[in-house]
Structure formats: C-alpha cells, structure tokens
Length: 203
Image (cartoon, rainbow, N blue to C red; front, top):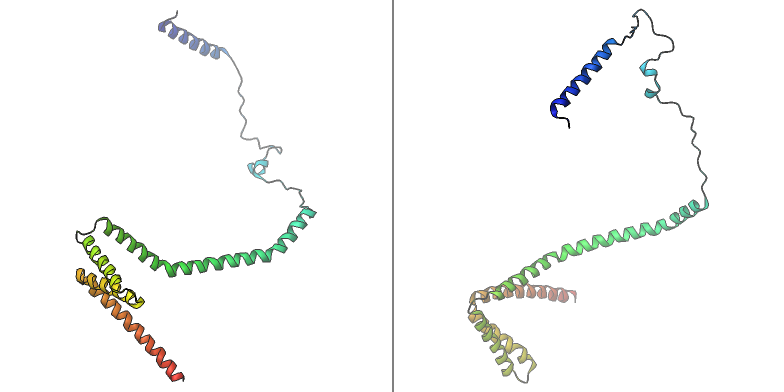
C-alpha cells in the first residue's frame, strides 16, 4: 500500500512532467492588426437575430360558427331574462332578510341575555329564593281554592294573592314592576281616550 509520503511524490512528479512538456511545445500566435477594418460580412450587435423580432406572415382567419355554438348562444339568449329575474329576486330576498334580522336582533339579544341571567341565577340562587317561591306558589293555590265556582274569581284571586305575597317578599322588585305597570296602563288609557274621542267626533 502507498502511504501519504509516496502519494505526494507522485503528485509532484506529475505536475513537473506536465509543465516540462508544455515548455517544449512550440506554437505560433498571430495577432490581428489594428489597421484592418472590419469586413463587410461581420455584423453589429443590434443586427443579430437575437435582438430583433422577425416579421411574421401569420394571418388571422375567423372560424365559422357551428351548430353547437349557435345552440348555446340561442339558449343563453332565451335564459337571460329568467336568470336576471332570479338574481333580482334573490337580492330582494336578501335585503328583506337583513331588514327582518335588524328588526328582531335587539329582541333576540335581550332574550339571550335574560335566559343567561336566569340560568346563572338558578345555578347559584340566594338562600331565601326557594322559600319565597314556595310562599308565592302556595298563595296561588290558596287563591284557586278560594275562587271555587267563578271563572273571574279563578283568575283574579290567585293572581292577586301571588302578587301580594311576592311584593311582601321582594319589595324593591315589586315597586319597579308597579312603576312599569303604571306607565303601561297610563299609555294604554291615553290611547283608548284618543280612540274614543276620534269615534265620538266622527259621529
């Protein structure tokens, strides 16, 4: 086997042999004179075909319309009024749906918020909540028992007793509900008064 020293000697001998061989080779180098003008056969860079676009002799020939193209065009012309009508109806339906959603969106948000608040309240109610519900429910059952035989009493007694017991247990909420009911009754009575006056003057 050859070691690294013998390999380097082989490389050195090869390099010396090649350079010595090149030294003994002889050749003639001829340089062009500056006095010579360029011949007529040589070209400028701009004249090369790489930098110019050849003029094409292509002519555009329009193809004849066949039976299939005629059929598709006539079908498209026939269906165009119907597609325009469908697009108009779809746009109209989208606008109406957006208006309807904008109308009911506040009510939906209030309902969702109320349901969420009720769920959270029922998950962790205050300690006096269930006894209060029991008292209100018992007063409603007592009102039904006291109003036996009369339909008007059957509506008024349970509702009145339940409202009375609820107002005793929850006075703040009862006062706010009473205020809202008072405002509502006042608006209803004023509307009824205006309708009554309109009917009276119309006679």
